[in-house]
Length: 251
Image 1: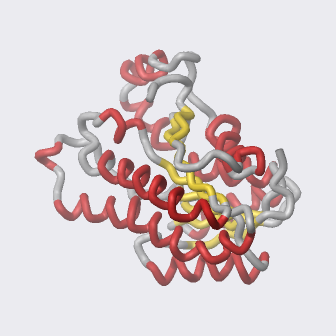
Image 2: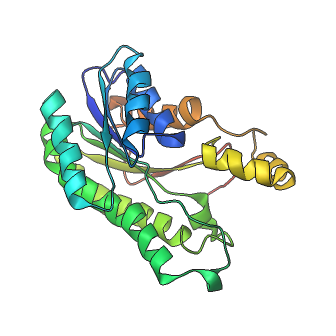
């Protein structure tokens, strides 16, 4: 499996799962634009990706701002001449709380960052994915949305919206050679590490709920799955949700 010579934008690539995907794509040979709300983190990860023998550029981007999305896409085109891959892994931070305590402002922030931002990025990058002849989009859903997890009233609906827009785009854009898939991950991101530190007993139960009995690695497990979906070997897979969670959730 190789992505040599292809160009990817990884949105939310400054940490956690996004960073893992950026590293995995770089290891597979892709040049990577690392986009993140925090430009210093984007630049730091771009340096890590470049150490894999490819070219990587960091870009500060707030996905709630359409102009910043357009600038990020323009940066990719200016540096590499086109775009083959888009990975959407960004969403605003949120607090786990009862649904009755969720505010309209919190809902809108999650919607703007987690669904509207994903959609605008997809729309903006579409012409280059179409022209590449092998365009790939990987979005990120969540088992919290599939299961309707208690306390995730701001997060779960947005992640289910991401899966829905993934299916819509897969049907509309397949004739242009673009595949669009989603991953629902379970991995050792910084947010998971913080949650496990705060809830050690619950964390042990959560890890034990996987079939393989361990938490996933952001690069070697989730990133590798994303790299596969971006490869020619996955050209006949689209509109699919891949559970990369060690068997924790069965669809």
